[in-house]
Image 1: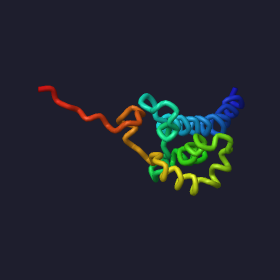
Image 2 (image 1 turned 90 degrees about the vertical axis):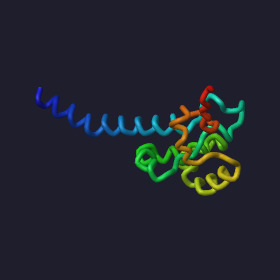
Image 3 (image 1 turned 30 degrees about the horizontal axis):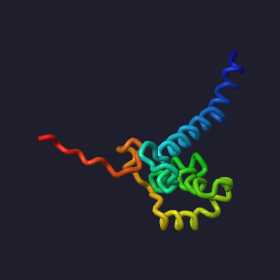
Amino acid sequence: MQQAVTVVNFLAATWLAPNALRMFCLHFVSSNMHYYGDVEDKNIMQQCQVLNAWWMLPFNLFCFNFGSTHAIHHFLVKEPFYVRQLTAKTGHRVMREMGVRFNDSGTFRRDNRFGPEPVLTVAA
């Protein structure tokens, strides 16, 4: 029994824990970089944002820079992730010129909505 516990502990530390960390980072990044709800139909400029701020580095580190480069996939769908890494500098420049948002942390308050924060009015 002790030998089985040793094997399970080894697998949990070397296989399960890193995969759980990677999956958390991937889900956190992907769920917050896509906009939902008020995106104009077929407007790919409003579908996602680029998350490459310094505070996203720990998350991007564990999911192969997904937050910084996945938005490129919305414009060049056949590019694999390693090519997106090579073209990210140019891709980011073009996307910024076309109006794609970068590091829009307001998405956390807007429930992943694209539009600006709603203006709250007080009823008289």
